[in-house]
Image 1 (spheres, one colour):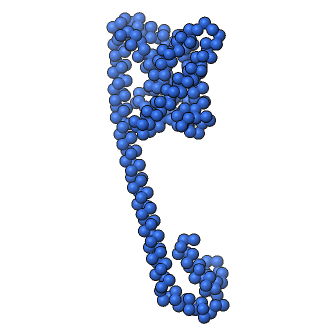
Image 2 (spheres, rainbow, N blue to C red):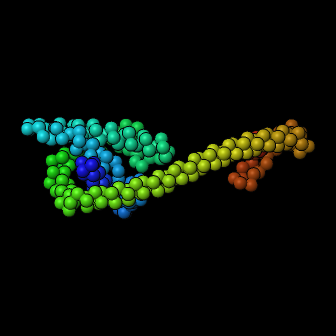
Image 3 (tube, one colour):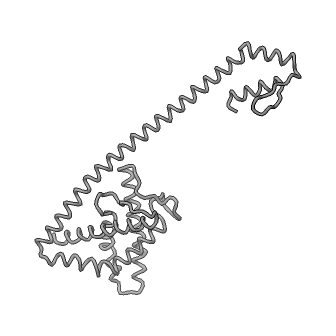
Length: 260
């Protein structure tokens, strides 16, 4: 039970640090403060899962008494964080039909879910976590909470767990509602597109009917008769003051009707 509470606190601390890092990074890029992540509170769970997973999976590499251990941690951290980021992106898109990040414009990306730059940055963070942050900051901090006694340790863990679960429930409801709205908007957009296409098709049919009607009107027949009778006659247009033959004038009218 103690170990579960201990790792849960690790999870929450890293989820909070991840939120702070995200906010700072985005603020530098966009010059404004934005709320990052899935939850209402200042936590990004993917960082918590990633950190706890890395601590559990790569502690053996960290303990290697060899000069190359840091390179093993970097490479394995690169691979593990990339897999986690890709899976979380895919899963959340499948569930909520939304993407919380997209690296499609970044160099060497995979389906916009992971990219070389961010995976390299996460690998560096893995090295910092295992060699600096976790042994010299996180473990002493959790140890300080544990020094209050087992009862308080469990109470604090329970309160934080209740808060994060409540946040998760309400955040999930919010995202499900947003997903429903997006689906409805997509359906409305598709219906509108169909209506526009039907209107264009109907307008095209009416234009063809109008052209057929004009061809058979007495005016057109009269102009054609004049064209045959006065082949050298010229008509001055209003727009560019060109003098056109009757034949050219009729062709210009036809072009206008056809939209050319």
